[in-house]
Length: 386
Image 1 (cartoon, rainbow, N blue to C red):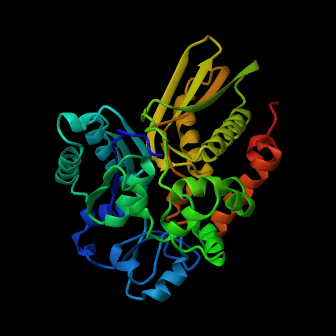
Image 2 (cartoon, helix red, strand yellow):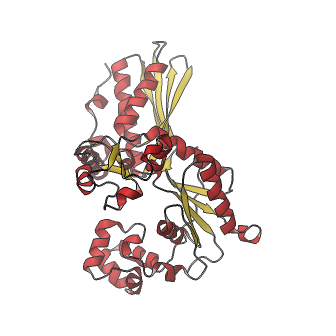
Image 3 (cartoon, helix red, strand yellow):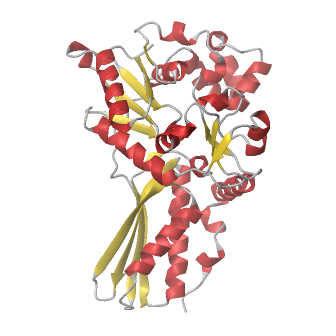
């Protein structure tokens, strides 16, 4: 059963990366636009609705996308610009509502429970939608429902620039005729598996006994059954920019060995970057801290485009360290911290990466998951102090 009395609005910026590019260059509007690397081995990071009509979707190999739509315009991504626009939308929502969750760079859940008695959740959502578009120039859609699951599915059904409210009690009826692939978390592979079982519609999935789904799909089967019946008690998790992932090391012997300090920095950055990816998060700010032998402590930070990629975070960390280490005094402590965390994964930042790069990161993380992060490091991370 649904949690009675909840009002959850899911906001999703329409074709966000593409929309930002259109703000920067009006010539891209209403054109089949692909954001990603230009090489044949690159992947599509985002595509316009005009490009989607040709069957193109995010994460598709660029060479296939170009075959499907030879006239498509291909541009390199600008994560710094996307991050800046994402923060602008976040600021508007933060100053407008008491409780919201930033679930990705372009998606938000807002808990409006109780507002129906004073203002009206639908009217409030409409006015917030208009405010975001007016102040940022970005199109956004929303779905209002009794839980996060239904609100997200609803939003996806009315994009772009749409809005919809699913009344209490109509959750199951709303999703019943939709394809199983429309349920968040199903994924292409699971959907294909369900198709092979003869399950194409959510209504069919909802009628299968939980025991049968558990036998066929394990624990995922239980979750799919709940979703197919419109059940989701997941709370809106308050968004806090202050959340961070950090690590630091105090040396047994104070050191000025620059090569050793760089190796420690690489090791620590790799460790918490892997932790970011484990938690499916992206960092928007990097901080490096040094404590000298006389206990003077200095730090610098850099706001960056959201990422969880080692090679990007390492570059920023090294630059910050080099700017900090100017006294050439003995160092007793070195620390690094990632903040401005949002949900997301490495796939979001593949504008110039090839399929091989994607697979490399997947392989690296697979080894670290299985054996532990200490068993696979960059060569620069294993230089000893001397």
